Amino acid sequence: GVTRNYDFTVQRGMIAPDGYQKSVILINGQFPGPIIEANWGDTIVVTIHNQITGPEEGTSFHWHGLLQKATPYMDGVPSVQQCPIPPGSSFTYSFQADLYGSSWYHSHYSAQYAGGLLGPMIIHGPSNAKYDIDLGPVFLTDYYHQEYFDILKTATAPLQSGGNPAPLSDNNLINGKGNFDCSTVDPGDTTKCTNNAGVAKFQFTTGKTHRLRLINAGAEALQRFSIDGHTMTVIANDFVPVKPYKTTVVTLGIGQRTDVLVTANQGSSTSSFWMRSNISTICSLAKQPNALAAIYYDRADTSKTPTSTAWNVPDPGTCANDDLSITEPYYTITPNAPTTTTTMEINFFINSTGNFLWTLDGTSFRANYNNPLLLLANVGKLDFPDIWNVKNFGSNSTVRVIINNNSPAAHPMHLHGHNMQVLHEGPGQWDGTITRASNPQRRDVQQIRVGGHMVFQYDTDNPGVWPFHCHIAWHVSSGLYANMMERPLDIKNVLTIPTILSQTCTQWALYTANKVVN
Ligand code: C2O
Image (cartoon, rainbow, N blue to C red; front, side):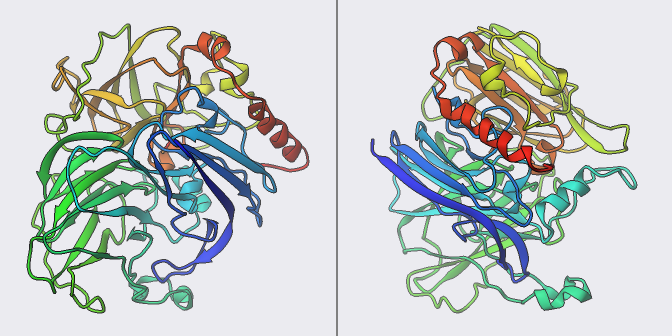
């Protein structure tokens, strides 16, 4: 493969993607950030220049879903795999496009990606189904008018009246666009708001089959995506090609992707249709849950808005993905017998200062950027402070994990470094059965419903420390996170960890020596 070079300058800016002016953090001035594209097997090199000032913040970037085999120090999780990139510094990531399909990259520092540091990432590879036109990313983001750090404070603040404390999103955008009804903003804010900011537009060619790459890159919301009048054929979930199946609605939890094929065979060459993504308001907290984008056939007037009507598919309200029985990987892998099995509980509690925190397996993980990196200084040890929430699987060759969700929210659970073999998911406790044991679903994010369970497995072919967490920005930042330690002796003896890794911490220490860092 070849090398694909990208240069990202990260700084604060004002934008109004839905007409409402707000302060965000941008990559090269863009929202969403620039698309990263490569072919399977290429090397991707991204240099980040942290120019975040007023106030300053550290940053670090994660390449969602890529395996980072032999490069766990390029996975971008601060306090685990690297120290934050300090303001005024640069850092160069270099890694292989080791899977292909549709994904995204995002900051993994605090809940910073919800403040703007995110963008699509497409790795081109062989296709398991024929299509004519690749329309690229359909980037779905719930959208907040508050700054991310203020939302995070609300999400972990002492509870007023019980229940889930995360705030409601204000809007829902497709490819960073959407309209907002300015009559709903506070009277003091009306000068910041313009109606009819405009929606994203897509072009269909009559008779042709189009590939759309749906990406849920939001902070909290479960999305239900559909196209008026058209059925969709699902061909991949996350980075895993699946045996094609038809649907009218695709459900995506945060972090999930679904590639669909759509044939332009409705209406005439002047037709137009809405593409819509609705936040499931049963599962998520949203003021304006409905995102729209316009699809125009060949000669349709693109200055007019479509008048099509939505499919009538009621929200099942389970907050679950499509049933595992229908999401069958295109390439068969039969799971091995597990060499270790562990059960983890998802829960929450109110701490001594009244703050709301999430726990995974009884611990609420807190990143501490001044601790020694788990990946660097601590491998080979057996004991870790509880607060680091390390699950050390030693030299086990196949790990099975059973998760029980005892919380009143559904969670999109994400594992770094692997595609999870999802053996089972459903309400209540696991009954021990495996859905399609000969070839279970694989993907890197799986939705777990309220009061439900999820069982997954992976082979430990990737020495490293791999985060396993809920991908809801407010949940991961308030503790719903564990560090899966894989083959610690091989991290120490087989991997070559370059000196740039320890340099990130030297730089961060120099920076913090003169500052008070949150
Ligand atoms: Cu999309 Cu831990 O990340």
